[in-house]
Image (cartoon, rainbow, N blue to C red):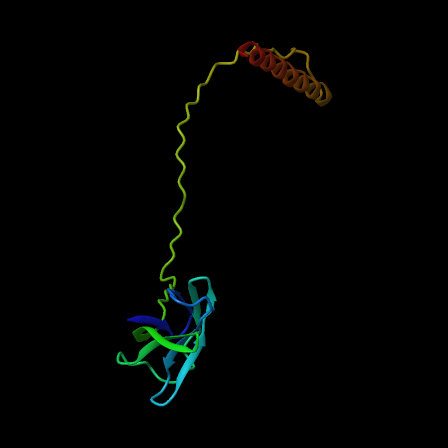
Length: 161
């Protein structure tokens, strides 16, 4: 049985063995399309090979019955031969479709182990002068205190490196 398709082309290749002639044979595939009509597809012959491309059969009107026979006709030196016959089955090619049913987005969790080490920072206590009076002096004193703390911290960080 030969399987042909309604929705795609089928490529057939036959090996020919012609003995007693050097002429290139004429090769045709005959497909029954109704009780009184047939479709004929001419093959391309190269050496001892005959290649036929059967187009999609969606427009042929009827479904082939298993009793319908495809026939390969060969004409060489004015002689007619039928070296091959097969039952024909016409089918739809396999198709697959998919539809998304459910989509879930899961949170991505990243776990990181971290250890925090606290090292004491040595700070000198700066005493305020007893005669500090007025806002301007207090601001200068606070700025000086901050600068000393930053300087001390920088020295300790550079020692650790």
